Length: 184
Image (cartoon, rainbow, N blue to C red; front, side):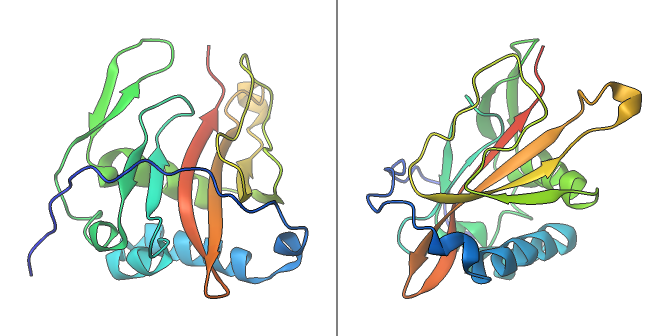
């Protein structure tokens, strides 16, 4: 089996369709999130690949202002095993570059949030307080996977992953993954 080269694909353009209230009533997006959780917890590349939008791909940002890395469904198939190191942008606070493979940078954070008590919020950028303006940089539908934080850390360890979605042939797919957390 040949691993596809991780060449740049065009950056996603925001969806041109308005946000539909029916999205939040549709059980398919929650099922998609549960499949993403299973994929992350089991390192199932075939499952992850099946969740990525077939024509738009999936854009991933380790941190809200970080570099967006775009993946096709074919590339997503190998994200748990490839050693390709992406440049995810600078880390908050230190400003040091964040570099590493998808399975070393993105997966641990998603596994952590899916392993805690989290809540889902449809088309709401849920957070625990921030020193910056929180913005979802795309138009369209999304879910926030929100961990509220712990009292022992003054709730400053809150954590949110936003999963952007778009439909293809009546089925939702992931078009973006974007992380928010408290920053100094």
